[in-house]
Image (cartoon, rainbow, N blue to C red; front, side, top):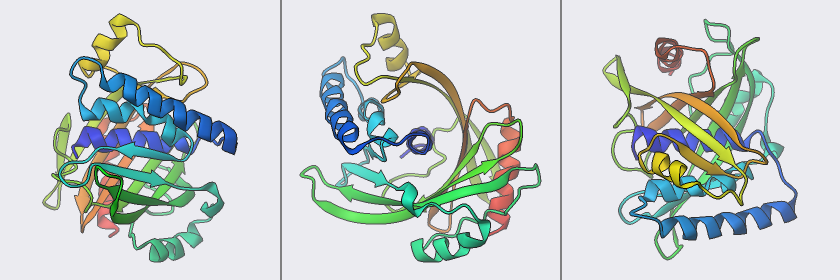
Length: 259
């Protein structure tokens, strides 16, 4: 899984935290999303990554599907607001329960402060839908007045091949570890949205990532830095942030040094 793949996954998880749906709406949307995946897979040489992006609405309602290589063909992640914590003092207990060490401070040196966190549960399946591996992680939100939310994800790395920073647009180094920074243009659209011909070309070129499941058309730029450390993958991601890559890197270094 490349840096872009991880960033897509993290962006969809971040969107999931902004929306909840009634059971009927969730089932209906999931059905529609799977129809979209079937439709999109028939387009001109669509890659697995683009099929993943077509499944974004699943994430908006609490889970998502991502394609991995080899024996594992899909990884489904889910979380629930019922397990959300809003006090930093509760984080150690959650990390011990999940088996994840995030290294996050209560407040970063740039002023971003802990707002909430919840565990994330993942399951890898083969092409026949059989569960072959499971893992856990944590999704955190940090806030600062006048700034876009910072979403932080820490999860086990064993389900994916390759280094998380592979394919990043820009790289940094810290204590011998490579961190990958990327920016991606997302267009969040309703489940029945039909791609115009001109937009299909932008998607195929990788200039725009289409994500189904929003109640209206929204364009957002995600900024993300990702790295692997101690068998874990860490990702800091924010939509429409005014921060520069170096600022993401500085926050990542604080987490790395906090391990």
